[in-house]
Image 1 (tube, rainbow, N blue to C red):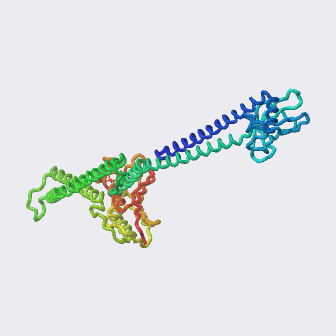
Image 2 (image 1 turned 120 degrees about the vertical axis):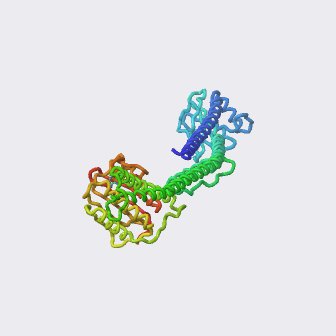
Image 3 (image 1 turned 135 degrees about the horizontal axis):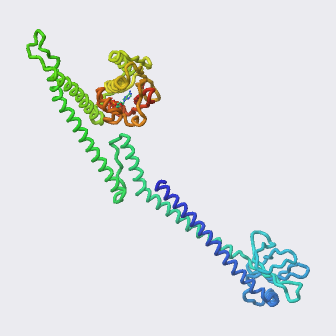
Length: 460
Ligand code: ADP
C-alpha cells in the first residue's frame, strides 16, 4: 500500500472514530438529561396526594415551588385523565396514556396533542386506591439541549475535517508528491530518457534536498557513463591502427612460398606460416570486437553522438537485399522472404541493414548447414516489425533472456570457433533502442529461433 493511501485510510479511520465518539457524547448527554427529568418526577411521585393538593392550589393562583414545568393530572377509577396543573411553558400538554394505564417507573410517552412533543411520565396511586396521580415533564428542553450539542459537535467535526484535509494536502505537497515525481523520473531514466530530472521541491524541505541529491546522483552517473562510453570509443579507435598494421604484416607474409616466378624471397617455414595464419585469424576477430565495441559506444548514446541518420527507406528492398546476400554467402540455405512489395519507413538504413545482417549471420553461424532461414517484414499500428527466423537448434530457456547482453554466449567454445564476438545481438538491441524500439527473441529448443526488431516508426 502506498504511503498516500495509508494516510488516507488513517484519516478515514480517525474520522469514523471521531464520529462514533461524537455520537456517544450526544447519547450519554441525552441519557443524563432524561435521568434528571425522571428523578424529578419520581421524587414528586413519592407523595402524590400532597402534590395533587399543591397543584390544585397552584392552578388556583397560589405559588408552588418546583411545579412550574411539571404536568400534574388525576386519573379517576373510570380511567379518565383530568389535568390538575399544566406546565407553565406548555399549557396544552397532556401525556398520552391509555385508560387506567399505570406507569410505575418513569417512561417516555407521546402527548395527546400529537406532534413531536414527548414527555417522561410516572403514575402514583392515591391513598383511596382507585384513582392515581399522573406526573409528567416535557422532554423538549432536553431534546433541544441534545440537538444543540450535536450541532456544535458537528460543526467542530467539520472544521476539524477541513483542517485535516489541509494538513493532508500540505503533507502530500511537501512530502509525497516529490516522492511520486522522483519515482516517475527514475522509471523514465531507466526506460532510456537520460535527460529526465526531478523538478525542484519546496525550498527548505527534506523532499527538496532529496530531489537535489537525486538529480546530482543521476548527473554524476550520466557523466560516468559518458566518460566510460568515450573511453571505450577512444580505446577502440586507437586499437584500430595497430590492428590494421598487424593485419597488413600478416597479409604480407602469409601465402609466401618463394616458388613463384617473381617471388625471390625465401619460403616461410610451415610452422611460422601456421602461426601467421592463426595470428591473422585472431587479429581479424579482434578487429571485429573492436569495431563492435566502437559501434556500441556510438549507439549507446545515439542522440548525443549523432549516430542515427534517419531517412525514408524502403525496408522491403533492404530485406530482399539482405536475403539475396545471404543466399550468396550461404548457398546451402533455403532463404525465404515474406514482405510487402514496398514498405517505406524513416530509419537509419545502414544501422537497420547492419542489424539484419547480424541476425542472418547468426542464423547461419549458430545452425547446422542446410537449415532454412526466413526474413519477414510487417507493419502494424505506428511500428514496423522485422523478423529473422531459423529452424535451427534454438536457444535454451535459461539463456534466452540474456542473449542480448554484451559478451553473453550460450556455448563459449563453439561461439568463439564460429568467429563470434558476443556483441552481435547487443548491437542489434542497440540499433532497436536507438530507433526508440525493442529487440526480442523467442525460441523453442529443437524447433528454431525467431529474432524480432520492433521499430516505432511511421511507415507507408
Ligand atoms: P556471437 O558473436 O557469439 O554470435 P551474439 O550476441 O550474436 O554473439 O549471440 C549471442 C549468443 O546467442 C550466441 O553465442 C549464440 O549462442 C546464441 N544465438 C544467437 N543467434 C542464434 C540462433 N539463430 N540460433 C541459436 N543460437 C543463437
